[in-house]
Length: 119
Image 1 (tube, helix red, strand yellow):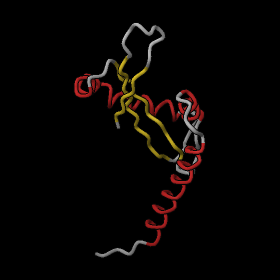
Image 2 (cartoon, helix red, strand yellow; image 1 turned 60 degrees about the vertical axis):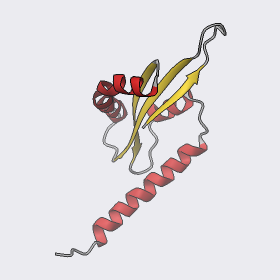
Image 3 (cartoon, helix red, strand yellow; image 1 turned 90 degrees about the vertical axis):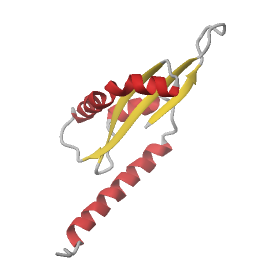
Image 4 (cartoon, one colour; image 1 turned 90 degrees about the horizontal axis):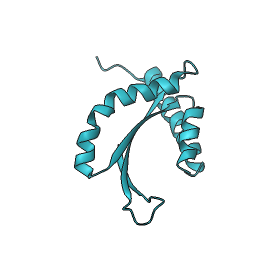
C-alpha cells in the first residue's frame, strides 16, 4: 500500500515535500520479541527496490518502507505502537485492528478444524 502526504517545511518560503510511505502490515503468530524488527527488515527487503518506481509514478520526493506486525492473538508490539504514535494516529483504531486480528485468527482456526473435505 502506498500513500503520499504533503509535509510542510519549517521555512514557509520553500515548497512542501511530497513524502510517501509503503506500509505492509502482516498478522503472524508471535514467536519471539525480535519478530517486529525482523518483519520490518523483511518488508524493507521486498519493497525498497521499488522505491524509484513509486517515486516516479506518484511524483514523490522520498518514500519510507515500514513492515508492521500484528499478533495473531491480537498483540500490538511496541514497534507498532511507537510507529502509530509517531504519526499521531487515534489509538481507537489499534483496538479495532486487535479485534479484527483475533476474529480473523478464529475464523481461520474454525475453518481448519471444521472444514469437510470435498475429495
